[in-house]
Amino acid sequence: MTHPHYDAIVIGSGLGGLTAGALYAQQGKRVLVIERHDKFGGAATVYNRKHLNIEVGLHELCGFGHLDLLPQVWHQLKLDDRVERLPVPTFFAVKKSGGPQQVMPEGWNEAKAAALRLFPQHKRGILRYFQILHEVRSNIFHFVNANKTRWWWLRNGPIMPLKFRAMFKYNKMTVSQLFDDLFGNDEDIKFYLAANIGYYSDRPQELSALFYAIAQGSYHEGGGYYIKGGSQQLSDALVDIIKENGGEALIRRTVTDILLDAQGQVKGVTHEKNLTIGKRRDPKDKLPRSDFAPLIFGNAAPNILQAMLPDSKQAAFMQPYEGRPLSPALWVLFVGMDRDPREFGVTDYATFVVPEHCRNFNDYANFKTAFAEMPGKDMPGYVFTDYSKLDTGMNEKGRHFAVLCGIDDMNNWESLSEEDYYSKKDAWEKALLKDLDRQFPGLGQHIVFHEMGTARTMNEYLNTPMGATYGFAQNAPFIQSKPPTTRTAIPGLFLASAFGSHGGGFVGAILSGANAAKQAKKWDARQAEDGSTSLGAAQTI
Image (cartoon, rainbow, N blue to C red):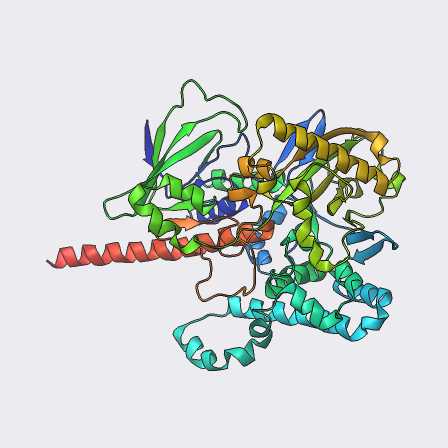
Protein backbone atom coordinates (compact mmCIF):
# COMPACT_ATOMS: atom_id res chain seq x y z
CA MET A 1 0.00 0.00 0.00
CA THR A 2 1.27 3.47 -0.89
CA HIS A 3 0.17 6.72 0.74
CA PRO A 4 0.51 10.41 -0.21
CA HIS A 5 3.54 12.52 0.49
CA TYR A 6 4.27 14.18 3.83
CA ASP A 7 6.72 16.99 4.51
CA ALA A 8 8.49 14.98 7.21
CA ILE A 9 8.32 11.54 8.82
CA VAL A 10 9.29 10.86 12.44
CA ILE A 11 10.56 7.35 13.20
CA GLY A 12 9.73 6.73 16.87
CA SER A 13 7.82 8.92 19.28
CA GLY A 14 10.15 9.69 22.16
CA LEU A 15 10.43 13.31 23.26
CA GLY A 16 13.20 14.05 20.76
CA GLY A 17 11.19 12.95 17.74
CA LEU A 18 7.94 14.47 18.98
CA THR A 19 9.63 17.81 19.68
CA ALA A 20 11.19 17.88 16.20
CA GLY A 21 7.87 16.88 14.63
CA ALA A 22 5.85 19.45 16.59
CA LEU A 23 8.24 22.31 15.81
CA TYR A 24 8.28 21.35 12.14
CA ALA A 25 4.48 21.07 12.09
CA GLN A 26 4.25 24.60 13.50
CA GLN A 27 5.89 25.79 10.28
CA GLY A 28 2.88 24.55 8.32
CA LYS A 29 4.45 21.18 7.48
CA ARG A 30 2.52 17.92 7.33
CA VAL A 31 4.24 15.41 9.63
CA LEU A 32 3.78 11.65 10.04
CA VAL A 33 4.82 9.93 13.29
CA ILE A 34 5.35 6.15 13.29
CA GLU A 35 5.60 4.41 16.68
CA ARG A 36 6.11 0.69 17.33
CA HIS A 37 4.53 0.73 20.82
CA ASP A 38 0.84 0.97 21.66
CA LYS A 39 1.23 4.54 22.94
CA PHE A 40 3.37 7.56 22.17
CA GLY A 41 6.24 8.87 24.27
CA GLY A 42 8.99 6.27 24.70
CA ALA A 43 10.24 6.76 28.26
CA ALA A 44 7.76 9.64 28.69
CA THR A 45 4.73 7.41 29.17
CA VAL A 46 2.31 6.22 31.84
CA TYR A 47 0.76 2.76 31.95
CA ASN A 48 -1.73 1.01 34.24
CA ARG A 49 -1.31 -2.18 36.26
CA LYS A 50 -3.91 -3.43 38.75
CA HIS A 51 -5.58 -0.02 39.10
CA LEU A 52 -2.22 1.70 39.57
CA ASN A 53 -0.98 4.38 37.18
CA ILE A 54 2.76 3.93 36.70
CA GLU A 55 5.11 6.71 35.61
CA VAL A 56 7.72 5.10 33.37
CA GLY A 57 10.51 7.64 33.30
CA LEU A 58 10.04 11.12 34.74
CA HIS A 59 11.34 11.87 38.22
CA GLU A 60 11.81 15.58 37.79
CA LEU A 61 12.20 17.87 34.80
CA CYS A 62 14.80 20.64 35.06
CA GLY A 63 15.86 23.26 32.54
CA PHE A 64 13.68 26.26 33.39
CA GLY A 65 16.32 28.66 34.70
CA HIS A 66 17.21 31.94 33.00
CA LEU A 67 20.44 30.40 31.71
CA ASP A 68 18.71 27.35 30.23
CA LEU A 69 17.83 26.63 26.60
CA LEU A 70 14.65 24.64 27.31
CA PRO A 71 12.37 27.67 27.94
CA GLN A 72 12.90 28.83 24.35
CA VAL A 73 11.52 25.54 23.02
CA TRP A 74 8.84 25.24 25.70
CA HIS A 75 7.45 28.71 25.00
CA GLN A 76 7.65 28.28 21.23
CA LEU A 77 5.42 25.21 21.53
CA LYS A 78 3.23 26.97 24.15
CA LEU A 79 3.38 23.87 26.30
CA ASP A 80 2.31 25.67 29.48
CA ASP A 81 -1.09 26.03 27.79
CA ARG A 82 -1.27 22.25 27.44
CA VAL A 83 0.43 20.75 30.50
CA GLU A 84 0.80 21.77 34.13
CA ARG A 85 4.22 21.74 35.76
CA LEU A 86 4.26 20.82 39.46
CA PRO A 87 7.29 22.18 41.38
CA VAL A 88 9.15 19.51 43.34
CA PRO A 89 9.26 20.42 47.07
CA THR A 90 12.91 19.48 47.71
CA PHE A 91 15.71 18.58 45.31
CA PHE A 92 16.64 15.39 47.17
CA ALA A 93 17.56 13.81 50.49
CA VAL A 94 20.63 11.65 51.13
CA LYS A 95 20.26 8.64 53.41
CA LYS A 96 23.80 7.43 54.13
CA SER A 97 24.55 4.69 56.62
CA GLY A 98 26.12 5.90 59.85
CA GLY A 99 24.84 9.46 59.59
CA PRO A 100 21.65 11.53 59.72
CA GLN A 101 19.56 12.04 56.59
CA GLN A 102 20.61 15.23 54.82
CA VAL A 103 18.30 17.32 52.64
CA MET A 104 19.33 19.29 49.56
CA PRO A 105 16.63 21.97 49.23
CA GLU A 106 15.29 23.52 46.05
CA GLY A 107 16.66 26.93 45.13
CA TRP A 108 20.16 28.24 44.43
CA ASN A 109 20.63 30.24 47.63
CA GLU A 110 18.88 27.63 49.75
CA ALA A 111 21.16 24.86 48.44
CA LYS A 112 24.26 26.94 49.08
CA ALA A 113 23.11 27.81 52.61
CA ALA A 114 22.35 24.18 53.43
CA ALA A 115 25.77 23.03 52.21
CA LEU A 116 27.50 25.74 54.29
CA ARG A 117 25.47 24.79 57.37
CA LEU A 118 26.30 21.07 57.05
CA PHE A 119 29.94 21.48 56.01
CA PRO A 120 31.21 24.82 57.41
CA GLN A 121 34.82 23.60 57.18
CA HIS A 122 34.45 23.68 53.38
CA LYS A 123 33.13 27.23 53.09
CA ARG A 124 35.69 28.26 50.48
CA GLY A 125 35.17 25.13 48.37
CA ILE A 126 31.37 25.37 48.54
CA LEU A 127 31.30 29.02 47.47
CA ARG A 128 33.69 28.23 44.62
CA TYR A 129 31.59 25.18 43.62
CA PHE A 130 28.43 27.23 43.12
CA GLN A 131 30.41 29.98 41.40
CA ILE A 132 31.77 27.40 38.92
CA LEU A 133 28.27 26.09 38.18
CA HIS A 134 27.09 29.62 37.43
CA GLU A 135 30.12 30.58 35.33
CA VAL A 136 29.91 27.44 33.20
CA ARG A 137 26.18 27.84 32.62
CA SER A 138 26.60 31.50 31.70
CA ASN A 139 29.42 30.72 29.26
CA ILE A 140 27.49 27.92 27.55
CA PHE A 141 24.26 29.90 27.35
CA HIS A 142 25.88 32.93 25.72
CA PHE A 143 28.03 30.83 23.40
CA VAL A 144 25.10 28.74 22.13
CA ASN A 145 22.85 31.78 21.67
CA ALA A 146 25.47 33.95 19.94
CA ASN A 147 24.79 34.80 16.31
CA LYS A 148 27.94 33.10 15.11
CA THR A 149 28.43 34.76 11.75
CA ARG A 150 31.79 34.89 10.03
CA TRP A 151 32.42 38.30 11.57
CA TRP A 152 31.55 36.96 15.04
CA TRP A 153 34.24 34.31 14.67
CA LEU A 154 36.77 36.85 13.38
CA ARG A 155 36.14 39.11 16.40
CA ASN A 156 35.85 36.42 19.06
CA GLY A 157 37.93 33.52 17.79
CA PRO A 158 41.29 34.83 19.04
CA ILE A 159 39.90 35.64 22.51
CA MET A 160 37.67 32.59 22.97
CA PRO A 161 39.70 31.14 25.88
CA LEU A 162 39.32 34.47 27.70
CA LYS A 163 35.73 35.29 26.79
CA PHE A 164 34.51 31.79 27.66
CA ARG A 165 37.10 31.04 30.32
CA ALA A 166 35.03 28.60 32.41
CA MET A 167 33.89 26.65 29.35
CA PHE A 168 37.49 26.04 28.31
CA LYS A 169 38.88 25.46 31.81
CA TYR A 170 36.41 22.75 32.83
CA ASN A 171 35.89 21.11 29.44
CA LYS A 172 38.51 18.41 29.98
CA MET A 173 37.93 18.02 33.72
CA THR A 174 35.87 15.20 35.24
CA VAL A 175 33.49 15.54 38.17
CA SER A 176 35.86 13.52 40.36
CA GLN A 177 38.74 15.85 39.53
CA LEU A 178 36.59 18.90 40.22
CA PHE A 179 35.48 17.57 43.60
CA ASP A 180 39.00 16.53 44.56
CA ASP A 181 40.26 20.04 43.77
CA LEU A 182 37.52 21.63 45.88
CA PHE A 183 37.11 19.19 48.78
CA GLY A 184 40.14 16.91 48.84
CA ASN A 185 39.41 13.48 50.31
CA ASP A 186 36.28 14.45 52.27
CA GLU A 187 33.81 12.08 50.63
CA ASP A 188 30.75 13.09 52.66
CA ILE A 189 30.33 16.48 51.03
CA LYS A 190 30.70 14.92 47.58
CA PHE A 191 27.87 12.50 48.34
CA TYR A 192 25.76 15.40 49.57
CA LEU A 193 26.29 17.74 46.62
CA ALA A 194 25.96 15.06 43.94
CA ALA A 195 23.91 12.20 45.36
CA ASN A 196 21.94 12.31 42.09
CA ILE A 197 25.02 11.66 39.93
CA GLY A 198 23.14 8.67 38.51
CA TYR A 199 20.87 11.11 36.66
CA TYR A 200 23.85 11.69 34.38
CA SER A 201 26.36 8.84 34.61
CA ASP A 202 27.59 5.84 36.57
CA ARG A 203 31.20 7.03 36.59
CA PRO A 204 32.03 10.41 38.20
CA GLN A 205 35.68 9.74 37.32
CA GLU A 206 34.71 10.01 33.62
CA LEU A 207 31.66 12.30 33.64
CA SER A 208 32.36 15.76 32.21
CA ALA A 209 32.49 18.48 34.87
CA LEU A 210 31.21 20.86 32.20
CA PHE A 211 28.12 18.78 31.47
CA TYR A 212 27.52 18.23 35.20
CA ALA A 213 27.71 21.97 35.90
CA ILE A 214 25.16 22.71 33.17
CA ALA A 215 22.70 20.07 34.39
CA GLN A 216 23.12 20.30 38.16
CA GLY A 217 23.15 24.07 38.03
CA SER A 218 19.87 23.94 36.13
CA TYR A 219 18.19 22.08 38.99
CA HIS A 220 19.54 24.56 41.53
CA GLU A 221 18.65 27.65 39.55
CA GLY A 222 15.37 26.73 37.86
CA GLY A 223 14.06 23.98 40.12
CA GLY A 224 12.64 20.57 39.34
CA TYR A 225 9.15 19.86 38.04
CA TYR A 226 6.81 16.97 37.46
CA ILE A 227 4.09 17.01 34.80
CA LYS A 228 0.65 16.73 36.39
CA GLY A 229 -1.01 13.58 35.17
CA GLY A 230 2.36 12.05 34.30
CA SER A 231 4.87 12.46 31.50
CA GLN A 232 2.33 10.91 29.11
CA GLN A 233 0.59 14.30 29.18
CA LEU A 234 3.66 15.94 27.67
CA SER A 235 4.03 13.30 24.95
CA ASP A 236 0.34 13.49 24.06
CA ALA A 237 0.49 17.31 23.94
CA LEU A 238 3.27 17.14 21.33
CA VAL A 239 1.31 14.60 19.29
CA ASP A 240 -1.71 16.92 19.45
CA ILE A 241 0.35 19.78 18.00
CA ILE A 242 1.34 17.57 15.08
CA LYS A 243 -2.23 16.45 14.45
CA GLU A 244 -3.68 19.94 14.80
CA ASN A 245 -1.38 21.05 12.00
CA GLY A 246 -2.61 18.39 9.60
CA GLY A 247 -0.24 15.59 10.59
CA GLU A 248 -0.86 11.96 11.43
CA ALA A 249 0.44 9.65 14.17
CA LEU A 250 0.40 5.85 14.00
CA ILE A 251 0.99 3.26 16.74
CA ARG A 252 1.95 -0.43 16.55
CA ARG A 253 3.85 0.13 13.32
CA THR A 254 7.51 -0.79 12.84
CA VAL A 255 9.63 0.98 10.23
CA THR A 256 11.56 -1.64 8.26
CA ASP A 257 13.29 0.47 5.59
CA ILE A 258 14.36 4.05 4.99
CA LEU A 259 13.91 4.70 1.28
CA LEU A 260 16.49 6.69 -0.68
CA ASP A 261 16.33 8.20 -4.14
CA ALA A 262 18.93 7.82 -6.89
CA GLN A 263 21.03 10.61 -5.34
CA GLY A 264 21.08 8.90 -1.92
CA GLN A 265 18.66 11.36 -0.35
CA VAL A 266 15.77 10.16 1.82
CA LYS A 267 12.41 9.90 0.11
CA GLY A 268 10.29 7.93 2.58
CA VAL A 269 9.89 4.76 4.64
CA THR A 270 8.20 1.39 4.59
CA HIS A 271 6.55 0.14 7.75
CA GLU A 272 4.39 -2.71 8.93
CA LYS A 273 1.96 -3.62 11.68
CA ASN A 274 3.14 -5.25 14.89
CA LEU A 275 1.64 -6.22 18.22
CA THR A 276 2.47 -4.54 21.51
CA ILE A 277 6.18 -4.87 22.22
CA GLY A 278 6.87 -7.91 24.38
CA LYS A 279 4.35 -10.19 22.69
CA ARG A 280 5.74 -13.47 21.41
CA ARG A 281 4.00 -13.66 18.04
CA ASP A 282 3.57 -11.48 14.98
CA PRO A 283 0.20 -10.36 13.59
CA LYS A 284 -1.23 -12.54 10.81
CA ASP A 285 -1.32 -9.60 8.38
CA LYS A 286 1.45 -7.04 8.77
CA LEU A 287 -0.26 -4.61 6.37
CA PRO A 288 2.95 -3.24 4.79
CA ARG A 289 2.77 0.40 3.78
CA SER A 290 5.04 3.00 2.22
CA ASP A 291 4.91 6.71 2.97
CA PHE A 292 6.99 9.43 1.35
CA ALA A 293 8.68 12.58 2.58
CA PRO A 294 11.89 14.43 1.68
CA LEU A 295 12.91 14.63 5.33
CA ILE A 296 13.07 12.13 8.21
CA PHE A 297 13.61 12.65 11.94
CA GLY A 298 15.12 9.51 13.45
CA ASN A 299 14.02 9.24 17.07
CA ALA A 300 16.17 6.18 17.69
CA ALA A 301 19.69 5.03 18.44
CA PRO A 302 22.02 5.20 15.43
CA ASN A 303 22.38 1.41 15.23
CA ILE A 304 18.60 1.05 14.88
CA LEU A 305 18.46 3.58 12.05
CA GLN A 306 21.49 1.96 10.42
CA ALA A 307 19.62 -1.33 10.04
CA MET A 308 16.84 0.47 8.12
CA LEU A 309 19.24 1.87 5.52
CA PRO A 310 20.46 0.16 2.33
CA ASP A 311 23.59 -1.92 2.97
CA SER A 312 25.72 0.39 0.84
CA LYS A 313 24.94 3.39 3.07
CA GLN A 314 25.26 1.84 6.51
CA ALA A 315 29.00 2.22 7.09
CA ALA A 316 29.08 5.93 6.19
CA PHE A 317 26.06 6.59 8.38
CA MET A 318 27.57 4.86 11.44
CA GLN A 319 31.11 6.20 11.07
CA PRO A 320 30.62 9.31 13.31
CA TYR A 321 29.23 7.15 16.13
CA GLU A 322 31.76 4.34 16.12
CA GLY A 323 33.67 3.97 19.36
CA ARG A 324 31.59 6.46 21.31
CA PRO A 325 30.94 5.14 24.84
CA LEU A 326 27.34 4.58 25.88
CA SER A 327 25.57 5.97 28.91
CA PRO A 328 24.63 3.52 31.67
CA ALA A 329 21.46 1.49 31.65
CA LEU A 330 19.03 1.69 34.55
CA TRP A 331 17.00 -0.72 36.64
CA VAL A 332 13.63 0.34 38.01
CA LEU A 333 11.31 -1.16 40.59
CA PHE A 334 7.78 0.23 40.55
CA VAL A 335 5.83 -0.13 43.81
CA GLY A 336 2.23 0.53 44.74
CA MET A 337 1.30 0.96 48.41
CA ASP A 338 -1.97 1.14 50.34
CA ARG A 339 -0.50 3.58 52.90
CA ASP A 340 1.26 6.91 52.50
CA PRO A 341 5.05 6.41 52.70
CA ARG A 342 5.35 9.44 54.99
CA GLU A 343 3.88 7.26 57.76
CA PHE A 344 7.09 5.22 57.63
CA GLY A 345 9.60 8.06 57.64
CA VAL A 346 9.75 9.01 53.96
CA THR A 347 10.06 12.78 54.30
CA ASP A 348 11.19 13.84 50.83
CA TYR A 349 10.20 13.44 47.20
CA ALA A 350 13.50 11.80 46.16
CA THR A 351 15.66 9.98 48.70
CA PHE A 352 19.06 8.69 47.61
CA VAL A 353 20.06 5.61 49.60
CA VAL A 354 23.84 5.17 49.81
CA PRO A 355 24.79 1.67 51.05
CA GLU A 356 27.23 0.98 53.90
CA HIS A 357 29.98 -0.36 51.64
CA CYS A 358 30.02 2.81 49.50
CA ARG A 359 32.58 5.00 51.26
CA ASN A 360 34.25 6.72 48.32
CA PHE A 361 32.34 8.92 45.87
CA ASN A 362 33.89 7.03 42.95
CA ASP A 363 32.28 3.83 44.27
CA TYR A 364 29.16 4.83 42.37
CA ALA A 365 30.85 3.13 39.42
CA ASN A 366 30.47 -0.22 41.22
CA PHE A 367 26.71 -0.07 41.79
CA LYS A 368 25.90 -1.68 38.46
CA THR A 369 28.15 -4.67 39.13
CA ALA A 370 25.98 -5.79 42.07
CA PHE A 371 23.53 -7.36 39.63
CA ALA A 372 26.23 -9.53 38.08
CA GLU A 373 25.51 -12.07 40.82
CA MET A 374 22.50 -13.18 42.83
CA PRO A 375 21.69 -10.90 45.81
CA GLY A 376 24.17 -11.04 48.64
CA LYS A 377 25.18 -8.91 51.58
CA ASP A 378 26.03 -5.74 49.65
CA MET A 379 23.18 -3.81 48.03
CA PRO A 380 23.51 -1.19 45.28
CA GLY A 381 22.62 2.42 45.87
CA TYR A 382 19.32 3.72 44.54
CA VAL A 383 16.87 6.59 44.61
CA PHE A 384 13.41 6.15 46.11
CA THR A 385 11.01 8.62 44.49
CA ASP A 386 7.70 9.08 46.32
CA TYR A 387 5.13 10.58 43.95
CA SER A 388 2.69 10.94 46.86
CA LYS A 389 4.57 14.08 47.82
CA LEU A 390 2.94 15.83 44.82
CA ASP A 391 -0.62 16.33 43.68
CA THR A 392 0.09 14.33 40.53
CA GLY A 393 -3.56 13.78 39.59
CA MET A 394 -2.89 10.02 39.54
CA ASN A 395 -3.59 7.18 41.99
CA GLU A 396 -5.98 9.12 44.21
CA LYS A 397 -8.11 6.17 45.40
CA GLY A 398 -6.08 4.92 48.34
CA ARG A 399 -3.08 3.98 46.20
CA HIS A 400 0.37 5.52 46.50
CA PHE A 401 3.00 5.13 43.82
CA ALA A 402 6.78 5.20 44.16
CA VAL A 403 9.79 3.90 42.27
CA LEU A 404 13.24 2.66 43.16
CA CYS A 405 15.82 3.30 40.46
CA GLY A 406 19.54 2.71 40.04
CA ILE A 407 22.41 1.92 37.68
CA ASP A 408 22.47 -1.34 35.75
CA ASP A 409 24.49 -3.05 33.03
CA MET A 410 23.21 -5.21 30.17
CA ASN A 411 26.04 -7.68 30.81
CA ASN A 412 24.32 -8.63 34.07
CA TRP A 413 21.37 -10.14 32.18
CA GLU A 414 22.13 -10.52 28.49
CA SER A 415 23.41 -14.10 28.39
CA LEU A 416 20.79 -15.61 30.71
CA SER A 417 18.10 -17.99 29.53
CA GLU A 418 14.49 -16.85 29.96
CA GLU A 419 14.10 -19.07 33.03
CA ASP A 420 17.33 -17.91 34.66
CA TYR A 421 16.63 -14.28 33.82
CA TYR A 422 13.25 -14.22 35.53
CA SER A 423 14.54 -16.22 38.46
CA LYS A 424 17.42 -13.80 39.03
CA LYS A 425 15.21 -10.76 38.53
CA ASP A 426 12.68 -12.12 41.04
CA ALA A 427 15.44 -12.66 43.60
CA TRP A 428 16.71 -9.11 43.18
CA GLU A 429 13.19 -7.71 43.33
CA LYS A 430 12.67 -9.36 46.73
CA ALA A 431 16.08 -8.26 47.99
CA LEU A 432 15.49 -4.62 47.00
CA LEU A 433 12.06 -4.58 48.64
CA LYS A 434 13.60 -6.04 51.79
CA ASP A 435 16.24 -3.32 51.77
CA LEU A 436 13.57 -0.65 51.28
CA ASP A 437 11.75 -1.98 54.34
CA ARG A 438 15.04 -1.85 56.27
CA GLN A 439 15.49 1.79 55.30
CA PHE A 440 11.89 2.68 56.14
CA PRO A 441 10.66 0.07 58.68
CA GLY A 442 7.11 -1.11 58.15
CA LEU A 443 6.77 0.18 54.60
CA GLY A 444 7.26 -3.25 53.06
CA GLN A 445 4.11 -4.62 54.68
CA HIS A 446 1.99 -2.13 52.73
CA ILE A 447 3.35 -2.78 49.24
CA VAL A 448 0.46 -4.21 47.23
CA PHE A 449 2.10 -4.14 43.81
CA HIS A 450 5.65 -4.32 42.51
CA GLU A 451 7.19 -4.78 39.07
CA MET A 452 10.86 -4.59 38.08
CA GLY A 453 12.61 -3.62 34.88
CA THR A 454 16.31 -4.19 34.16
CA ALA A 455 18.84 -3.11 31.56
CA ARG A 456 17.42 -5.92 29.44
CA THR A 457 13.98 -4.32 29.75
CA MET A 458 15.39 -0.96 28.67
CA ASN A 459 17.00 -2.61 25.67
CA GLU A 460 13.74 -4.25 24.60
CA TYR A 461 11.30 -1.41 25.23
CA LEU A 462 13.44 1.66 24.49
CA ASN A 463 15.32 -0.09 21.67
CA THR A 464 18.68 1.29 22.81
CA PRO A 465 22.04 -0.54 22.55
CA MET A 466 22.92 -2.26 25.83
CA GLY A 467 19.88 -0.55 27.35
CA ALA A 468 21.70 2.82 27.37
CA THR A 469 19.07 5.10 28.88
CA TYR A 470 20.77 8.47 28.34
CA GLY A 471 22.19 7.95 24.86
CA PHE A 472 25.93 8.44 24.60
CA ALA A 473 28.02 8.96 27.74
CA GLN A 474 28.67 12.62 28.56
CA ASN A 475 32.33 12.10 29.33
CA ALA A 476 35.16 14.61 29.41
CA PRO A 477 36.08 16.35 27.22
CA PHE A 478 32.49 17.50 26.70
CA ILE A 479 33.21 19.84 23.78
CA GLN A 480 35.07 17.83 21.15
CA SER A 481 36.57 18.60 17.76
CA LYS A 482 33.82 16.49 16.17
CA PRO A 483 30.83 16.88 18.51
CA PRO A 484 27.66 14.80 18.15
CA THR A 485 25.20 16.41 15.80
CA THR A 486 21.64 16.01 14.58
CA ARG A 487 22.84 15.97 10.95
CA THR A 488 23.80 12.60 9.49
CA ALA A 489 25.68 11.31 6.45
CA ILE A 490 22.34 10.63 4.76
CA PRO A 491 20.89 13.82 3.18
CA GLY A 492 17.51 14.55 4.70
CA LEU A 493 17.93 12.23 7.73
CA PHE A 494 18.29 13.96 11.11
CA LEU A 495 18.95 12.37 14.49
CA ALA A 496 16.33 13.55 16.99
CA SER A 497 16.90 11.47 20.10
CA ALA A 498 18.97 11.12 23.28
CA PHE A 499 21.83 10.14 20.95
CA GLY A 500 21.71 13.54 19.25
CA SER A 501 23.45 16.80 19.90
CA HIS A 502 22.37 17.55 23.49
CA GLY A 503 22.57 14.17 25.19
CA GLY A 504 20.06 12.15 27.17
CA GLY A 505 17.41 12.66 29.75
CA PHE A 506 14.12 14.40 29.06
CA VAL A 507 15.71 17.83 28.60
CA GLY A 508 18.54 16.53 26.42
CA ALA A 509 16.11 14.66 24.17
CA ILE A 510 13.84 17.70 23.80
CA LEU A 511 16.78 19.97 22.95
CA SER A 512 18.16 17.42 20.48
CA GLY A 513 14.75 17.34 18.81
CA ALA A 514 14.63 21.14 18.71
CA ASN A 515 18.08 21.28 17.15
CA ALA A 516 17.07 18.65 14.58
CA ALA A 517 14.06 20.80 13.61
CA LYS A 518 16.31 23.86 13.34
CA GLN A 519 18.83 22.06 11.16
CA ALA A 520 16.06 20.56 9.03
CA LYS A 521 14.61 24.02 8.43
CA LYS A 522 17.99 25.26 7.18
CA TRP A 523 18.41 22.17 5.01
CA ASP A 524 14.90 22.59 3.62
CA ALA A 525 15.64 26.22 2.75
CA ARG A 526 18.85 25.23 0.95
CA GLN A 527 16.97 22.57 -0.99
CA ALA A 528 14.38 25.13 -2.06
CA GLU A 529 17.11 27.56 -3.03
CA ASP A 530 18.93 24.92 -5.07
CA GLY A 531 15.67 24.00 -6.76
CA SER A 532 15.03 27.63 -7.66
CA THR A 533 18.57 27.98 -8.99
CA SER A 534 18.19 24.87 -11.14
CA LEU A 535 14.84 26.09 -12.43
CA GLY A 536 16.28 29.50 -13.24
CA ALA A 537 19.18 27.93 -15.10
CA ALA A 538 16.80 25.72 -17.07
CA GLN A 539 14.66 28.73 -17.99
CA THR A 540 17.76 30.63 -19.11
CA ILE A 541 18.83 27.77 -21.31
